[in-house]
Amino acid sequence: MRPRAFLIAALILTGVALWRDSSARVAAAAESEVVPEYKVDPSWPKPLPNSWLLGGVSGVTVDTRDHVWILHRPKVLTDKDQLPGQGPPATATCCVPAPSVIEFDPDGKVVQAWGGQSTDKYHWPYSEHGIDVDRQGNVWVTDEGNSRRPNDGGFIVLKFTRTGQFLMQIGKYGMRGENNDTELIGQVAEANVDDAANEVFVAEGHQSRRLIVFDATTGKFKRKWNAYGLPTTGGPSAPFDPAAPPSKEFGEVHCARFSNDGLVYLCDRKYSRIQVFKKDGTFVEEINFVKDGKGYVAPWDVGMSADRDQKYMFVADGANMKIWIVQRKPLKVVGSFGGPGRAAGQFLFINTIAVDSKGNIYTGEVTTGDRVQKFVPVKATGTK
Image (cartoon, rainbow, N blue to C red; front, side, top):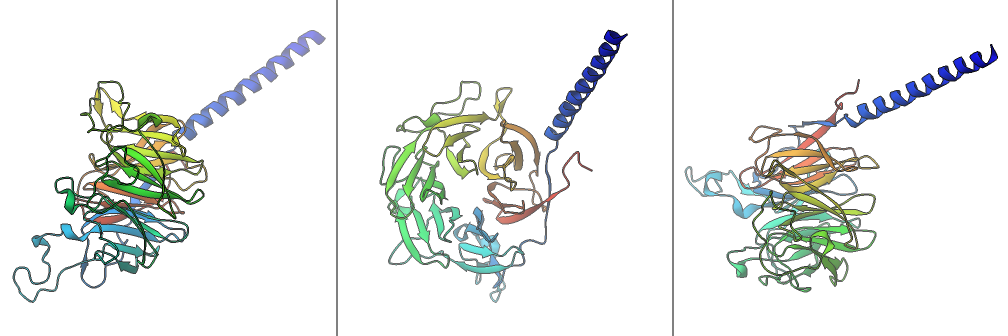
């Protein structure tokens, strides 16, 4: 009888172990299916003062106090926007182009605004594009320049204090750099500061096709790289062929965003992919947004989720007018929200994205969108 009792006990223990393993796998599968959801906050930001009007909001970032900073393009405002003195009635007071840089508090109230004018120390950007605020409170502004009229373009990165006092310039106004230059830069999309290393990572996507790194204090060149960490090369990028193997060169580097685990994510929006690197330029992995011979995501910018592990990244897609939710490990698309339109929560050419410490998402739209929006997290799918 004793052997039979041992056999029964063994079968029971085996059954319990299998049940636990099955339960763990089911729980893991359920967890993997939980995707965050967001809803727009139409009350953010508060109405702008002084009859201000926004042009294309090309850059947005969040500082260490959860203040939201935007960079917009006052010069793109047109006659239809009824600037003072344009069209009847002659006494119309609406509207006035807002200064290029605006700081909002977490409630959406304007704290300060500045920028938009050149001085004897620097040229203000011809076409504002990216903004970042480092840990010291310095504000970095980029100029994508003018590809058709180089002398009108900036091709520069400017560094200011929090209140707009000029500190430093990288590049030379009106002098466009090519892929192998280390002093001149091309049409810059973003410049983001790695505070720990005191380095600024410059995404050159509109002309030169590379990631280039400078010392954040001196502006001295440090390193640069191409797709897969390869050396930079000259000449224009080839047309995107989603049916061909992924290009060994960048098509258009439109963003450079850091994760907490020491990686940098580069948006190659022309070639419909995001490549991941160590900060020394070592290639780690990539996600290609290609399906059935077509690129279905155009990554214009990336923001990381606010949890410690940054489980997700939010990909701003200015071509399809939505935000894609991408799991970081392993890299895969798990959801999306938004869509084309002018209503709150929709997008027209979403160009930039940022996330605050509470998980709120902020977006900026260019071309005809001309606004900043806030999205707040709600109960995730699959939770009770």
